[in-house]
Amino acid sequence: MSGAITLTELGLPLAAVGGGAAYARVKAPAVYWSLIGLPIATVRFRATYDSTMEACGLTVAPSRLRILFARATSQREIRPVPPKIKRVRPTTTGLRVRLRLAPGQEPADVAASAERLRHAWGVHSVHVSVVKPGLVELRMTGFDVLRRVRMPRRLPSGPLVVPVALRDDGQVHVRDYRRVPHGLTVGATESGKSVFIRNLVKGLAPQDVALVGIDCKWGVELTPFAPRLSALAIDPDQAAELLDALVDEMEDRFRLIRAHQGIGSDVPDEAITSDVWGLPEKLRPVPVVLLVDEIAELFLVATRDDEKRRDRMVTQLIRYAQLGRAAGMYLEACGQRFGSELGKGATMLRAQLSSRTVHRVNDSPTAEMGLGDISPAAVLAATAIPPDMPGVAVAGDSSGGWCRIRTPHLSLAETARVCRLTSHLVPHLPKLARFRPATAPVPGPLDAVPLTRPFPATS
Image (cartoon, rainbow, N blue to C red; front, side, top):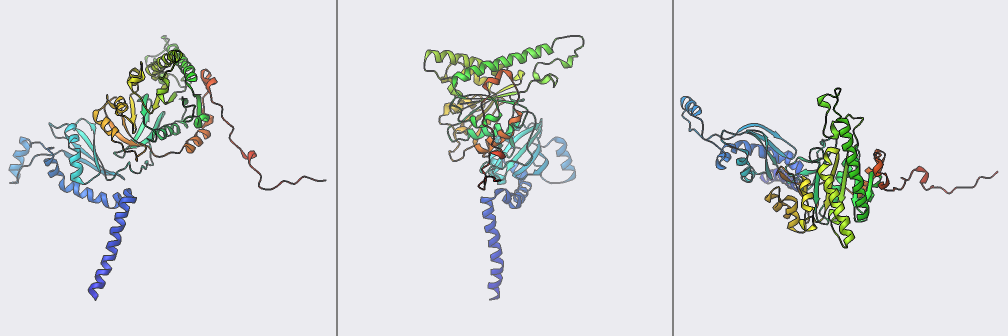
């Protein structure tokens, strides 16, 4: 009887702990990783590091000096040398390990074995990044961080820097317009493309920047952000006029730069600049970010007059993308479909859009148009995005690097609220004043409905 009682006393707590761990692994993977997964993964990594590296072919033969020293001090077998562990740092989503590569190794060798390392150490994924020559970092994630996006508390910040998504290695994906000025974002309906745009608008709204929108779907996507927009075009005719005004604004900024470059004896060499960011702050014009929703609508034509308007719009858009960076004017082109069959100028415009974000698409040519010149593997990853994961995308740039990202859900109402609260930050740009969207006044306390019925005053 006492044995049965002891078994019950031990079994029930163990069953409760096991059930709680299984529940946390599904419903709260970050908690499970911090309490259980991280200690297990750390012990497994330390215990099997040498044998795993040798099995993956990531070791080199020891040097002659090492062999002589080992023979002189011990009779142990001289084994191949793996990369040296420089640092192991746990995180809330996984492990970060820095390795000093052995002579003769390169980061591509470690990257090629990432999948085998993942299985050997029992983690969800392993990503390899280069810290500096001879030093690489393994970023291991203990669970699928894209299944339920939780952005870190500390986010990157700065002028024209917007943290828009979480990468599959646990890092924050940042849209930095000063580093990568122009971008292309494509995705099918319900793929998360609109949420990506909302995160961009919400991140840019509190900054000192002019937001300009072109939404040829009669403004249904960008009109809710009207209080924060300096200009908005909702049809192709308005878009053509707005692009002309933007190019005029860009030319004025180049004239300002040239005027500041008036080479005189009193102008030091370091004061001569080739873009607006080198101008004195009191002379520097406010940066402009142009958001184009449904970029394909600017290319479509039905009549001969439409064709003339299209050629003019595409020409101005390409000029804007080619020259806008130096003038502090940036472009974010979005759409469901983007391909070379849109017509003349499509591939030329694509060449200027260095940042690429491809959500789930309905056809592989769109994914190839966005990522084909970056990496064939990125195209395959984009076409494999499941429909039940809205917001998941493949992000890449002209450097050839790419990763899977997912934007946190952001409602249209929340983004519109931020735009209303920051409407006082809309800069005055005379050339764009006539395109400023009309906005309804925000209801104040005087517009509230009284809760009691008023009575007339009597003498």
